Structure formats: C-alpha cells, structure tokens
Length: 334
Image (tube, rainbow, N blue to C red; front, side, top):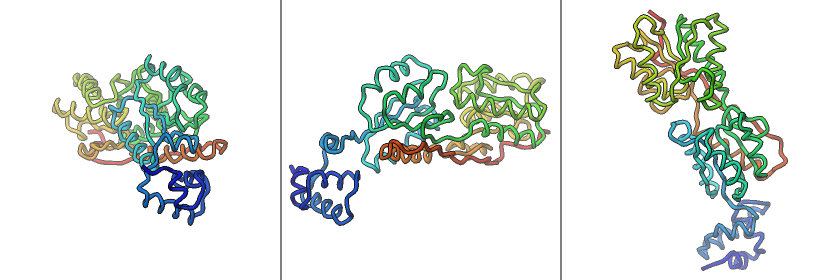
C-alpha cells in the first residue's frame, strides 16, 4: 500500500508539501499540486483520515447539533450540509437531540467538549439555556443556523418578519378573524424560531388594530398537530375564524386537510397560509413564505470553512432569502 512518503518521493516534494497539495489546505503552486495529484493516481494512493489528521492537525470532521430531523426543514438543511461537506471530503458527526431535553444538556456539558471536531454547525440555538455561550466554550469554530445568531457566524431568515408578512397578506385580503396554529401562548412549548413567528403574527395583528381578535391555538409543528388543532378550532360554526396562519407549512397543510374533512372549502370559506415552502406546499396549493433550507445548509458549511481557515476573521451573518409565494389557499373572505 502506498504512503504519503511514496507520493512525495514520486512527485519530488516533501511529505508536508504532498499533504498540503492533496488536502487542499495551505498554499501549494498549481504546478506542484498537479504533479502530486498525478503521482497519487499513479500509485493508487488514498489518504487515510488519521494520517491526514496527523499531517494537518485537523480531523476532517464537523459536528452538527440540531433537533431531530423529523421536520422537513431540518431534513432538508441536513441534506445541504452533508452535500457540501462530502464535496470537501469532510465527515459529519450528527447529534439530533430534542430542544430543552436532558439529552441535549448532557451533549452540551459533557459530550461535545470531549470530541475532536474542526468546527461545529449548531441549528436552533436556545438563548434561554445560554447554548451559544456553551458551544463557544468548546473552542471550535462555530456557525449557527436559525434566528439566534449574536456572537457567531450565522445563516438565518427573519422568522418574525416571515410571520408578519404572512399575516399581513391575509389582512390585506380583508380578513379580521385570523388564528395562529402552532403556538403555545407563552412560548414554553415552542422552539425559539417558532416563538419568533408567533411574535410576528401578534405584531401584524396589533398594527392592524386586530389584537382583540388574535387567537393562538397550541399545536405541534407537524401535519398531525395542525390537523388536530384545526379540527377543534373549526368545530363550532359560530366561532370559526376566516383565516389561519400556520407556524410552518406542515401545520398549515394539516389545517387544510382538517378543513376538507369538515366540508369547509379552502379558500372560499377558510384561507390558510404557511411558512417555509415545504416540498408538498405546491401540491396543496398553499400560499406560504418561501425559503430554501438546503441552500442554507450549503451556506453554513461555506461560512464554517471560512472560520476554520481564518479563526480571527470578522463574524459573517447571511440573511437567507424569503418571500411571499401566493398560491390558491388564500382569498378574500366571503
């Protein structure tokens, strides 16, 4: 089996130069890089991860901390992260743990500090648990994905603005009785991002002098959660809202299915708007606030590589694009 020393000898360079040329880390002239790559092909050399770590001081591994990937957003985000890391020959160590859980506490306090990563991508950081500060204490380059980003490079959308725009769309259509499906009232059962979306809904209702009509219906941010909550909300004909803002598209799609089961036409009798532009949103003709979590995953890796290469560089905050996508689930009230 060929070694890095064999490749270096064939290319006529030092082992350190050969390692830099093959890893892509550090300056090597184009001619030298090509010569080393040609020697590696001739010798059928494949770098061993532990050897690369010894030569470069890096593990070629990134730790990813995020909620369980049972929501479309997190699954798509993870896919984007994995695609970019794979293209860079990096491994990924995934810790998909529930927010505000004992498992997450143990991960932050005991597990992560003892692991060797070149950097960490953290999704859905909780400010109430001082998670950002605890992740920073690991000493690893850090990038966060989500609305709480002070003190780290970050990729995020403005969740408050997203829900405000969604609610304003319904208000502009003439709706005054608008319910929010996916809130807990005091935010104790929500992620930080979902709580920001609830705040955006409340902001829009107050600005339109509709705060007295605001209704917040507790629901898990899933299709079954949205279905169950909406079925209860629409059960009494005398108190039905004319429109619903879902905390996410899954909750909004669940609301549409519940309305159909009850014989309530969308959008002529009930308008529904979501947030995220889920892969099934177009199937349900759902009006939503669009974003691309897969692209956010790519950008998170790009920012992390910048932090790894230049730890002292200024922090970079990327505002991911989001816009109102109008389909056929919203219309003026009858």
